[in-house]
Length: 298
Image 1 (cartoon, one colour):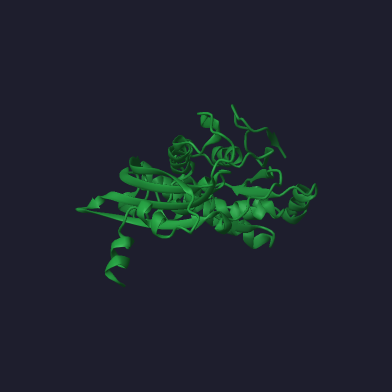
Image 2: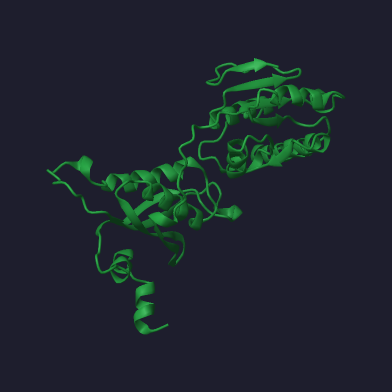
């Protein structure tokens, strides 16, 4: 690496954009030294503790063919950059700056004027230095969002009697008969589990117990594939497939997670997060009150 290469590697995204510009350079807008606090990080000690992130972003935009007429609606507003950062940080808790940068690039490059994005994100509170990641993405590299209508799955709750019922496969057949993908949820198993006497750790123990029960359901029918991430759920339902929800990751990563710990309440929270068409409850459980999603007994 030459001296100039080394200097450029640590240069501001604005200098990086200028150095890699084509013979016909585009206009650029930039956001410098934007600092926000967020709960992010892969290590346990980072969970539940906000830390400062610094954003430096440059977006190359296509020239405006018509006169601007001093009209903000004809440009890519700086507010769209800060709003995109806030939206991504509020959507879910992330472990990696790399993931945040990718999501942010995809969101910004969906703007009609944006052609290329230079994004640098740094953590400021990990030590007497800044740790960060920088990516460059162009419109051509960002996956095209399809124009399909959003899929609204069923969320289906099975109690333990249903999980162990001899006619479970027939029950699943009936759920899936209309052709709508389903997300199956289960409750706590009828087995003793550790009692920690400490609310946060007990919450994790209970979530893991629910996940064990999800695998019990998976063992009873091959259509019940256990998944834990939002990406896995989205991938499955967009392809008309059904899954069983292992709740720990989504619940613990949620910026504004569910306050209730009852398994039916967790299923309702998931239904609302996924914009489900309805929540269907099978077994000896009650329909929760105050749902924004239709909830019925199966």
